Amino acid sequence: MFGSSRYSIDVDQERGIVIVNYVDVIDLTDRRQAVETATREAREKGFRKILVDFSEARMETHAPEEESEFADLLSSHDVLMDCRTAYLSRPGQSINWFIEVLAQARHFPCRHFTDREQAQAWLAGVDED
Image (cartoon, rainbow, N blue to C red):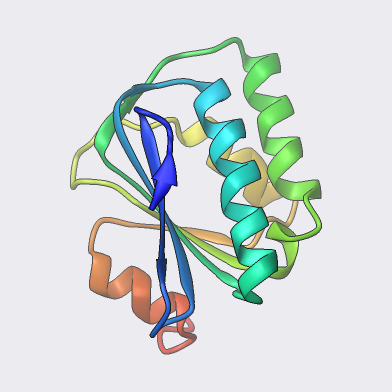
């Protein structure tokens, strides 16, 4: 496990998943750093599944231009575009949907969940809905 005080990166060897766990108040700098670390780990391990857990975090708001740039990073990253990325949050949790919607519109293969088991099933290709 490694990362910063606001995120950690874990690896589920059995399922072949790189897991990003966020805590506290996070911003786009935290997310960029986590993308760099998680994609490096995915590349080294040969994994193509990433679980991003926001359930213990809150996202700072940013200008739409900054959020669009981050969505561009996600949707143009060579490793991420070859992965499935599941976002996990608590039911009713306020998260930044703008980034996720923009990234999906730019063909970023991701999906949002409020249940960890459903997220893991989707990452495994079991839930193809």
